[in-house]
Length: 134
Image (cartoon, rainbow, N blue to C red; front, side, top):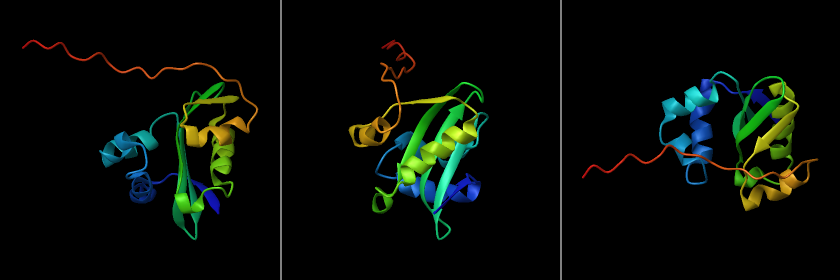
């Protein structure tokens, strides 16, 4: 397994990994996904096995203090082999930040709990719904 920086050629495989599993907002618009994964402040890494993507991590960072792990996904048949941990570790190293914040699911809890960490409350904020003028 090797970890490489995201390139456009990885997009189709990344979206296939995410299809039906998670990250519907990533999958629904491939062009937007590509812009997000390669956008300013993004550190997107892809885990390859025999040249094929088997997982990825997308992190955004200020390059000095703070990073945010937006997405981490490893194909089900490759889980429990240290790939997720390797992606998180490499994301932090390449981000230039001293810490990573994240949201997780119950399935992700054991991985993140295994790191030195601090639990803090968080929110996911959306724009207000438009007023119904009807």
